[in-house]
Image (cartoon, rainbow, N blue to C red; front, side, top):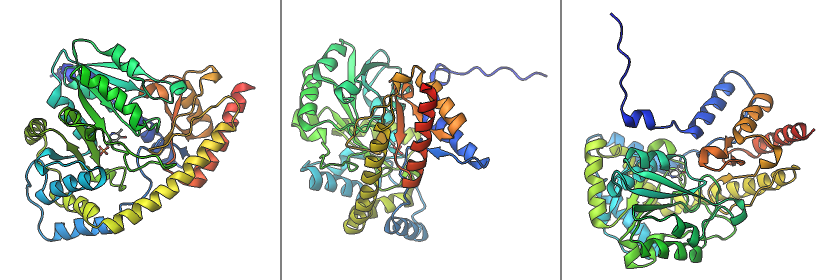
Length: 397
Ligand SMILES: *Cc1c(COP(=O)(O)O)cnc(C)c1O
């Protein structure tokens, strides 16, 4: 008896695997095989979760917080998230507008599912975080990419957004600070772009995952604070993964207008239910034990900022490479287009010959760049950039 071929769905056939996770996995496999790899591929902090957060989770686990919880999150956590929007941005929100989901990635997906139907178009600024186009496709909607390159600091202008809007446009995704570029929009720039979205009655998915990872005195902007109208059309995504080194915990948050929050909660109730109950108590401690959390975050920011400057300085010393000094997240996005190779070839050869892992810009919709994460040690940065410099010198020779 022969096994029949799998008859996979449209969704399964159309989804592309995450290229960032793929490079990271290849680098880790080389490392496990004993190779001396310098990886700039990580999409997560290299720090451990702060102790007080772990302790609160362990206490909850031992205390029997092991059962189902309400789908949109335990009440004290939803309250603490609403409280922090008030404290940080002066934004008044009810806990019922807050949904706690299994990771910020899932939060984004729920936001797309709650607003987009088949036939709708979604504007995605490129370079983009790799999951947005796939989520849009899984909702049956169509991604429309608008590329902003390094000449505009990887930031869209209102005219670029306006030009991409059609009668079918439903949603605009914004992500500042950005993964992969680290670019941070100013308040004025966002004001102008959001005005265009409002004029055309679009929804906005504002992915503010890196809101706390900003440097050079840059201030994060919470788009939902702009006006009541904007708040009524904006889904704000944030989370614990990047800010508190909690990527493995799988906890993301959204703040949304009440009807959208309700829809997201109902979708989540059928697809995954609540985030791991005891993990939510750890997240709660991150928000309520403020002094300890702030101390841990500040230490992380000092290290990230130092590495950011180190990597930026070293990259710009390499003939043929040019790199902007991004103000947020933990990535730099150098331009390597002058070497006359596709970025994919560049990355493959770099990994093969020099054992340096980087993600090609084309994975993010921007050919000719590399995404380098500096969420790694100063030593790896020094050693990795020296190898990259040698690689570039050999290419030119
Ligand atoms: C990491 C990341 C997320 C989601 O992170 P989770 O680990 O799922 O919480 C969302 N958006 C961007 C831009 C990210 O880089």
